[in-house]
Image 1 (tube, one colour):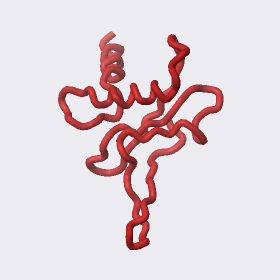
Image 2: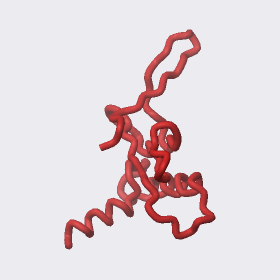
Image 3: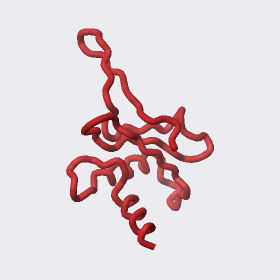
Image 4: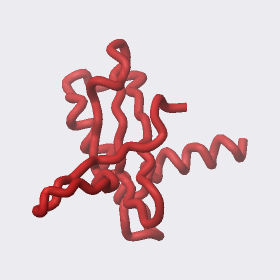
Length: 107
């Protein structure tokens, strides 16, 4: 489980009132609420058609290319969320991680 369930952002309208809105697709949080020991980040990559956006937590376990920055890994992860061939909006998890889970279930 993650340390939070939903995240809302406050936006101020032109008339001075504040409204609550979902996170925009591609929003990344990589400081403050993440572990200082592990390289991890939360990313809200999907569009909430109904309800609230649910950010996913990603932890980098092993870096085979040590020259890559976390920003590049976050961008790649977000880009992979747009690679679903059935739906035409970003999904919550990259399709390749969903396929990996399906293969592990079959074994």
